[in-house]
Amino acid sequence: MTDVSAEQVVRRWSRHPRCVGAARAELRTAMESWGLASLRDSATLILSELLTNAGQHARVSPGREIETRFMRMDGGLRIEVHDASEVPPQECKPDLEACDGRGLLLVAALADAWGFDERVGPGKSVWAELRLNSAAGSGDCRGA
Image (cartoon, rainbow, N blue to C red):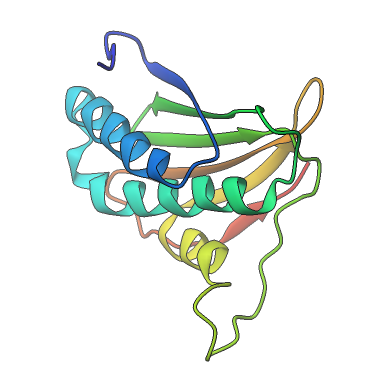
């Protein structure tokens, strides 16, 4: 159960794909409590892409977990996905015949801003921000 009394929800997940659905449920619960339900569709898709990327591309030791942080901001929401890989995310031009390679393009299209930061210790965090009543998809990608 999500404790949404705070302005932030922090959870840790295994790299197993079924954790993506559980993380989306946690996010939806927090957003509902914070009065941000209107951002739900974009936010859950962004979370899915970031968490899936971390599980697929963050090649780290078995047993390492991926951390999600959902933070209520003034007028919106920030989603962070932390992993132990120091390799920065890279947008790529998707192969039109491939079934993957579009995740960060979707994040850029849906988020008001997104980027990545180094962490204390190993790894990075990839984040996206959504604001109420804004034109999403500015594509502002800033790295560390």
